[in-house]
Length: 417
Image (tube, rainbow, N blue to C red; front, side, top):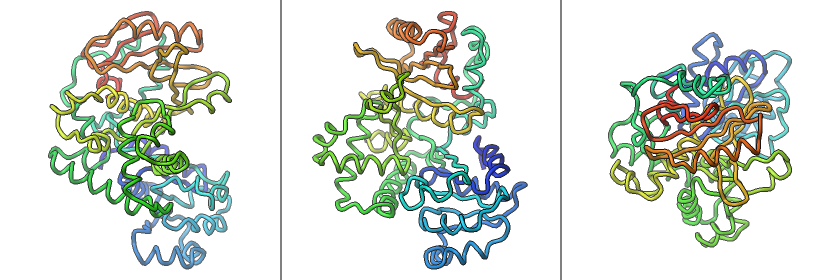
């Protein structure tokens, strides 16, 4: 299997917590990762609730199932029997590394179990493959650390120096394939199309229904289509509801389901005042550009290049890659957007402690002068807290544009220093 950058974090969490839960969208590779950990130094049997016998036991007698397990055990797809977490709580003691769990929905947010294992569980999210993982480049796991360590734009450019690497995946190909393992590793467009359609159908008709009953599935599908057409935009739930013909309350409920099942991510605007940060509308991003392209009817390079949403899809891809970097970063980090009162904006701010890095995304091969202007405005507003500014663009050269402002090609940046 391809090495997942999250694996060292899983092993470390098993040395610190009694329970470790790997969450993420269906088919991102959670089961494969859990089995790999079970085969390593953390030796343990592996159970899956996809097995009908195991699922029946988990639903009818979760306490008996957990009590019958050895000192260590891995259990896959625990969201299918949420009462298992209550049974696990009864068995948890001071010993670390007892349970490794996986779930295709954020089971910690479910009302029945949200407080069950507080303080006893490490929650780790596995995303679809990152660009660096697909290229098998270990250095890509240290991208954000490299950026925050760099003393100047010139030093950062040197870290990412070098021409196009032989095995780099073209950006358009990365957008179309996305990061779900099956389509990401398939060179045949027809196979990818069939996979995405089967995923969409199963997600709507089974996965979502397991969490919350959807009375009219066509309405939910219509919301998905309307939402993917707004990827990279500020979320306006009322406008979205009018467009797809759904009440505001229903739109909010469906959005929560999409977020809970990792189909969308909401990036809030940055404010030094936390209250304002929570009250302002976020930008919404679909979590996989391969699925987004499929839902938009984009199946080949020529359609993608001519499509009016190509810029939004590139920004979405960067948003995804940054979220993936956060999941395995050595220090806690967060991603925000930045918007000025006059409508100007910078796509992303990455926060680590009291330090910030600005990231502007441009799909084109040339950098518009307005980009530097926006980044200068951010620097004036944030002062010394802003340690570095980046322009990630579709060109070929990494260039220092100012002492703390660097332009780096998109694929070179995410393939690692």
